[in-house]
Image (tube, rainbow, N blue to C red; front, side, top):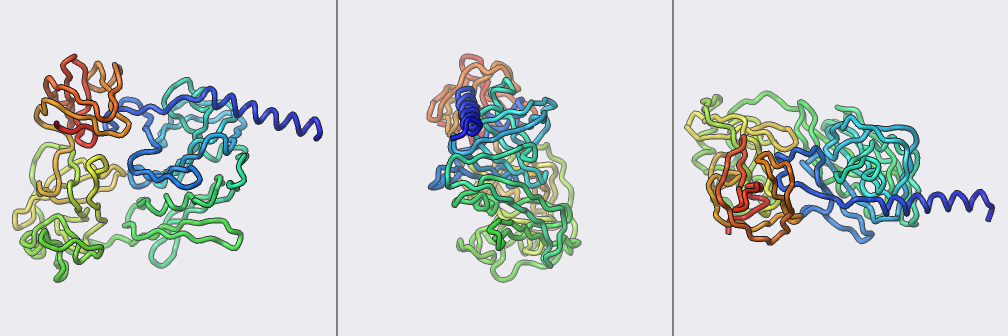
Length: 415
């Protein structure tokens, strides 16, 4: 073995071990909807999937796809100075010089059309315990230490139903293995202005390089007429995987009444946060028809229920109340206001006692805006509540020691 080759291997090994030693554990905030830190806790969430090779992958907010890598399997190297980014893709306005470290996560923000990576050295160089990321385009090299990984270019396309491109594609290199980052990409539902998401598919070229194609349907003007066929959305329908039989968010009477109206009466009510307790649909108008449906939201366990910000209210001509909402990915539409299907995301009255149900636990803070962390409570901890306090469109629970915790029902449960 030549001395030059030996020195190169020694340098890479030393850099890798240094990065592992300096890496920080991931910390999360109790209330992600109102946290003051701009970093978002991710990876190994309740909705994630762990593969046979040790990768974990998942999707945040429908459009941010992430995959983690086992430590010491891939070395990441940068050159030059780059920018730090938060997990949601926002710029921290801080820079970092070239480093090397063990690859921990690749994160694809489909709505931004940008990919980011995190490695064991980035936390140390950013001098914070919150994960910071660099754009994948700033990576000078990925060096696999495991034979199951190869470096491949991945292309992501956005097309209409005729196969024509409707937005610029994105291509980047990433460490691939038999478990495929594409599995996570198939679970995402990105957005394109003026279009509605339709489907996702994976193809592999003759060079064995993967491509993911998202297909969208062009939005048309709302006719406001027409009811779904005999299998229309009805709370008495049997549950099925087909549209016509799926359990929905309105009664048969609501659906029939909506078919006769093309206008809605506006209603003035305070903005709130709600989540879906059963399967519901998101629609382009107050008329809940198949043609107006943007997407389904399947019934989920309490900790994974889809959350919406109510930004407006309207009634159909028949008087049925609808919520105009914005999703966590920024998409707008209408959902049912039926309390059998949706409820407040935050407790509105004092629950007296709660149990922490968030997998990663919650934090207690000195201030109502959830800053000034005091301590961490693990999942399963039972806490006594002194009172409840409104904060913006959310609420906080005040413990008997005077500290504040989240009142988000997906994180804590009334005991």
